[in-house]
Amino acid sequence: MVRTKPKINKNLDSISPSVPSTRKNKPVKKTNSNSNHLDQKNGMNGDGKNGNGLTRKQALFVQEYLIDLNATQAAIRAGYSEYSAPIIGYENLTKPKIMAAIDEAMKERAERTRVTQDKIIKELAKIAFSNMRSFVKWGPGRVELLDSRYLSEEDAACVSEISMTETSAGATVRFKLHDKKAAIELLGKHLGMFSDTVRNVHVGEGGGPVEHKFDFDDKTIKAAFDRLYGYNGAEEEKKGKKRNE
Image (tube, rainbow, N blue to C red; front, side, top):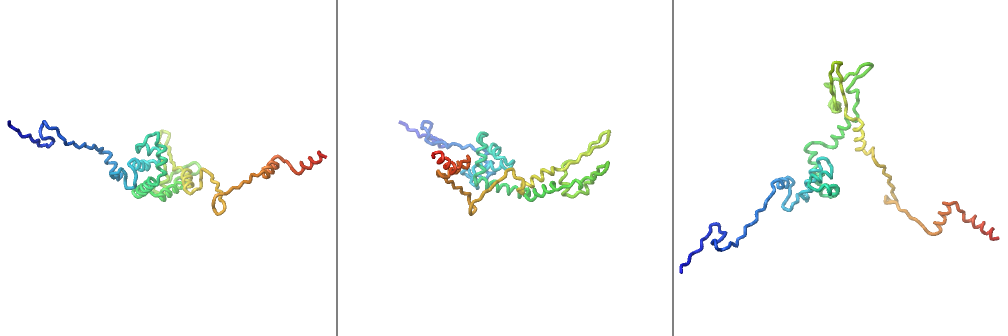
């Protein structure tokens, strides 16, 4: 009897074609390149959270919220369903970690763009306190625009529109400033002058809440009833005694 040696496969997957392989192939994990890019952008780690402890959707919510400061739309764009977006958006704005991330992102954006609250207030103040005499001269039968070369930077920032239309009948000039009233209202709200609601604050002793004590015994209830309906117990009692006599 002649014995033959089994053929050894170079791939080491099997010793011979007749012997089944006991080696298991490892599954290949598929990755999404777009997802990896977003995770890297948001600083996501292996646990699916970034350095601020936010999940991927929460980090996306922070980015989307900065666009229009609309929590519902930010939640939808971050991947939440439209049905739950209003609730999720509201809840996200109550979570300290998310609010801290939003504040930090706003500060970083302000540093990049150099847009600060003071700068916005100054721009609003230019419009709110602009004066038409800085731009136009008028008198009996005439209106004359001042040359823009002589306008200051503050005055020029107040101009919303300037145009001229020429026809066979002549030329028409259109000149418009930014909304002065709207700028004043925004400044007033910033200063707390124009509140939509009136707050009545009642403070008790020592700055605490107001305490109310009620005594509902029979005597107090009867006295209140008598005052309400004009009943005089003493006089009625005298009348009753006279009737009995």
